[in-house]
Length: 190
Image (cartoon, rainbow, N blue to C red; front, top):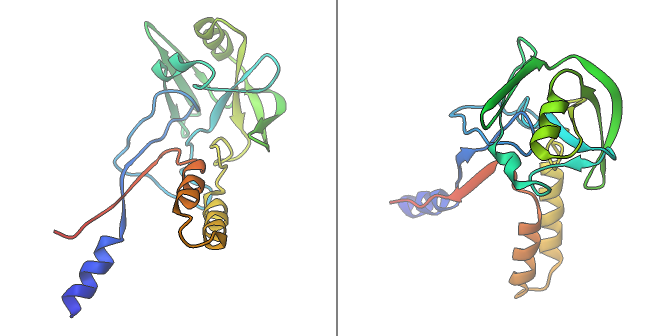
């Protein structure tokens, strides 16, 4: 009997297979073996993001080739490096200009435009004016801004309120929530 209980428990344990992080939202994802997880998410993950000439969020859905850009950030040295195909741009990540508020899918995110060589290089790559923005706080640059737990609870409430047999609706509701950066699988006991 004990073996049966252990098997059932293991069948529903969730395991992180791979975590996706990047310092600049919309650029190539990195897959570190270890990360620190805080209440607001993974520190420095999507700490920076892009805005267009109107100050609106700009990312990979707007220009797919952004994912070819590789960004790396050193919080200790406050340095950001952005590697484009054929060129690298590096500079201070804490040299900030104008403060702005950006709409992240209905959620206001405060930040400040990063001075230095980034805007020109990103604008040239995208063939349109872009600015690099540093989110005011860790976690704000993600689509959910560290609010994943709140969204999960809302989904559970929604799923419970659906009539039995409405699995398609529950399935669709679960898949509307962003899963940015997290791959979760069910493990099965062997």
